[in-house]
Image (tube, rainbow, N blue to C red; front, side, top):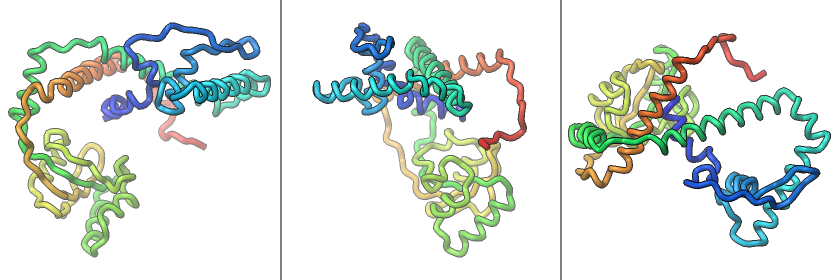
Length: 271
C-alpha cells in the first residue's frame, strides 16, 4: 500500500526539471553574497512555484529570478543560518533532502528498468483477457473495531448520508472524499473486501462489518459497469508502467530487507 502511494505521488513531487530526459547546461545567472544562482536553480524554483520550468515572458522570468535572489539572500543571512539549527527546520530540511533523493532514485529506476514483450503479453492476458469484465464504484468507511463498524451500520439505518459519515468517522485516507474509492475491479482489492462486494446489490451497504488487515469496513456499492474490450496496443504503455512499478517495488523491498530498522517508540508524537 505504501509503495503504491509512493509511485502515485512520484511525478507530482519531483521538480519538472528533474523529470526531463536530459539535464540542461548550467549557466550562472547571478551571485548573492558569494553564492551563485544558475539556470538550473531557476528552473527548479519555477517548476515548484508554477509547474513550468520556464516563465511565459522575459518579465516573468526576471520577476522569478528576483524572488529567488531574495530567497537565497534571506536563507544565507546570519539570522537565516541560525534558523537551520532550529529542530523543526532541521527536521524539515532532513526530510526534504531524503525525499528528493529517494524520489529521484525511483524515477531513475523506472526509466532504466526494461520490460520484455513476453511480460507485457502475460500481463495483458491476466489484467484484460482473464480478468473480470465488470468494474465497481464504491465507498467505504474504515473503523478500528467491529463495534465501531456496527455502530456506523446502525446509524446508516436511520438514513444518515454515507459520504458524510465517512468524512466524520472513517480512519482511512479516503475519508476526505467521503470514502470514495472510484472505479476498480475486484482483483484490485483484498479478498475479504472483494468477496463482500461481489454479493452486494447496487445502492446498498454491507449489513455486517467486513474485516481486512486494514481494519473493519462498512461498504457502499454505488454502481457497476461492463468494461469494453481493450486491445493490447491500447493499454501497452499502461502495462509497461505497471510492470516497471512492480520491479521497482521489488527493488525497494530488497533495500528494506537489507536495512536495519528498529522501533524506538510505540507511538509517534508531533508534540
